[in-house]
Each structure stands twice: as C-alpha cells, then as structure tokens.
Length: 222
Length: 389
Image (cartoon, rainbow over all chains, first blue to last red; front, side):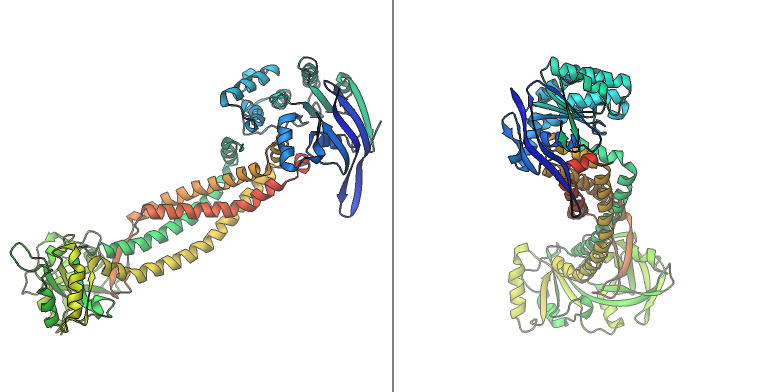
C-alpha cells in the first residue's frame, strides 16, 4: 500500500534572475513500512526531495501525498501541524537544542500534542529506552558522544510515533562504529516498529540497510 | 504550544557575557530613569510633607509663594477670628501669622553665598507643625532676637552652631536651638519671632497666615466666607498640603521633563544594544530555529520565544536598575527652589509607582529592542535555516 506518492514534482530555486532547476518532473511512490534509500551525487536534489516530502519546502510543480494528505495544498499553519503529527526528522548534524537536556530535546515535539506532563514523560522515557539512552536523559548534548547525540535525535524523531521518518545523511558525521549503531537502530525501527523511513545517504553501508534504493542525478530519478 | 521558557532562560545563561553586557546597559538607563523620577518625587514629597491636611494657609491672591505674598494685620485678624479655626487647650486660636524672608549665608563646602529662608512665626506655630522637633538647645524666646535653625542648614552653612550669632535685618540674631523638620521643607529654614523679624526687615505686613481647622470638612465654608468679606477679598485660602504641592510642581516638572528627555536619548542606545544582542542571538541560533520549525513549532512560537528572551533581559536589567537607584535614597542634595528662590534640601525618594514606571520603561525597551530580531527569527525559511553554518 502506497504511503507516499510523489507526482510530477519539479523544484526550482531562483538566484537573482536565474532559475536553477533542482528536481525535474519526479514521480514515485513509497509503500508503508518501506525503508527507502535516496542516493546520488552532491547537488543532485536528494535533500530537496526529502524536504518536499517532509513538508518543510514546497514544490514548484506537482503534488505530494502522504497518508492521503496532499501536503502541497496545506497552508503554512496546517503544514506545521501536519509535520508535528506525521514526520520525524533525523539530521546529519543531529540538530539537538544545546541548552536542553536529552529528555527535554526528546520532549520538544510532544509539547505540540495534547498529552499531559505524565504522558509526555512516559513517551520520552520509552523513546529513550528504544535508543538505549534512558540513563543519559539528564545529560546535555555536549555531554554526549556524536553517536549518542544522533540516538537522542532519533528518539526525538520517533517520540510522537510519526507516520514517516526522514533521515538526511544520518551517519554523515559519525565514525564507523557509531554509524553502524545508528543504522542498526534505524533498521530496528523499520522492522520492529514498522516505521516507514526515507534516508538520504552517500554512505554505501547505509544504503545496504535500505529495502529499496533510488538514485537521483541532476534532478532526475533513476 | 509555546517553546519552553527553559529554552529561553538557558540561552540567556549560555551567552553570559553578552547577556551581562546588555543587562548592564539596560540597568544603567533604568537607573537614570528611576533616579530622575525619584528626584522629582523627592522634591514633591519634601514640600508636600511640609503641609498638613488639617491646616489652611492664607496668602495674597495671585501670589504663587509666601515670598511674594502680603497680608495686612486687619485681614490676618479677620482670618484668626473665623469660627472654623480650631482652639488650643488654653482656648487660643491655633493660628500662626508669619513673615517669610530670604537672607544670604556662606556655604560650608564652597564658601559661596546662598539664599536661606527665614520664617517669623507666632507662638502657636509649633502646635501647628507637629513634624518640627527641637533636636538641640532650646526654643527661642518670643520678644527677643533669638532664632532656631534647622539641623540641615547647620550642616550646610557656616556659623549656624548654637550660641553663635547671625547678622541679618541690620541686627545680630543668637542661635539658641536646632530643629528637625522630618524631611519637610522646614528643614531648610531658620525660625524666629514674627514680631521681631517684621520690623527688622521693615515689613509692615505678614507673608501668610496658617490656621488649623476645627473640622476637616470646614474648609469650603471658611474659604467662601473669607472670599466674600471685603476685608479679606485679596486673600486666598488653600489647604496647606495642596499649597506646598503647588510649590513643588514647577521644580518637579522641570526635573521630570528634563530627566525623561535625557533618559529617552540614553534608552535609544540601550535599545540598540538589546537589538544587537538579539540579532546576534538569532544569527547564532538559526539552525535551532530551523529545527524547531521543522518539528512543527509555528512562526509565532519562535517570535514569542525570542521576544520573551528580550523581555526577560529587560526585566532583569530593569530590576537591577531599580535596585541600584534605590541606593540613591541615602543621598541628600540641595538646590534653589524656583518658588522661594532659597535653598531647599531634599532627597531621592523611591515609591511603588516609580518601581512600576521604571519596570514598564524597561519592558518597553526590551520589546522595542527585541521585536525586529524576533520577527527576523520567525520569518526564517526552514530550509535555509537548516542549511546555515
């Protein structure tokens, strides 16, 4: 069953008066529970495509439907609400808020829900338990290793039980061992928790974990 | 849901140096603002405390101060015999007919001549001015050329010690006591017998007549009767507290307006400082803003978070400024009172209203300084923000 449907999506940026095409008439679908790897050289449009699916950018043309919602038709406020409910983000450089503890970082997306404080605590503890960092919940990001920071970021991404996990180079800033741990974790989230994952990566080891690989080159999908 | 306050608070703490520098800037401006208001309030309070609610002062109509007022003996006697005038325990009217003149004395610190007020009083004056207490020596004897001097004058002017003589009104006046006016305008005066001072200064008329009301509500009745009497039509009655409040108005307003203009100019500097701090905060946290927005926090949440940060800075800075200004309560200064052309000693006075006004001023600075950077943070494009390095 198709969870994500990308139909005839094009994206261009404008630099001064020059139009720079990034994605050119892309169409594909992602099934529920799939682990998709997006690969391609730098500047091929991988991150742009990921951003469009995650609803933090808008296509110049085309439609993107996620779990039945055409995200390209949502206004900014609706899109923010939709992201909070349906998308979990994992960034290359973790993007944890440095002044918040691991617990508080993971709790952030839950502040946008209607959960009580007690319920939020339970969810956060569960998410941190899944990534194996329950004992580090009161540590600040600077007190954690790169791999641990990325695990906290993954806990933050899954804490709302989102429809979709998007990961942009999740192992790009990690050493080999930490990268392997993160990939295993993503794989576990996909197999054990049935999370649909879209991962942009340059790393062939990361790509191996994906069920399906799509290659982008000069804005064209192959 | 708003971005948690801990995020805002800890960010301020993380940028300790810039936070402290901004706080100092805001605190200094609020200090100046509060000090100016305290100064104006100090003048007001000093003069208003000189008056009493149940005392009424009679001065010549159109005279703004006792120095310019003249009340003849007949008019004074008419006022003294009004039925609303309270009586002392021995049955005498509680009235003091007074003359108010200015003399020159040498200041201790600068050796310069400065004006000092001399008040000639009637024997009942001390009963009417209960705040005035003898602190040293004794009360002067009526019918003699003796005087008592406010302790404040003694501290600031030469030759005012007990036993010394001051020369004015073509005669020598012996100081026999010091008094304390409890922070009122009397603290800047010298008192003597009105019947000795009038001939000494060649004054055939009084400057003012002050009496105590039998009943606080009697004021309107006595006022209208005095106005209708042809012998006293040139006299105006005012509640004493109101009279002294009017005396303070010109000077207090001058201090307040001048001070506020200066403070507003300073505040522009502080607002620019706060703005620079907040712009730097936005620039340093562009990726965080992008992350928060991608997680689902809306533009207005980001705007609010940054604005709260700026307001928090201004509240802390404002509190520091007010705390600093409160130490000015220990400072006493003196200057020429525009109403009497003589020295008036007064202090900086803090009040709850000044605290509130200063804090509002600080918060306005915080909002003005933080608004544009907060809008900038809220308007950041998510993708561009996440790509920032």
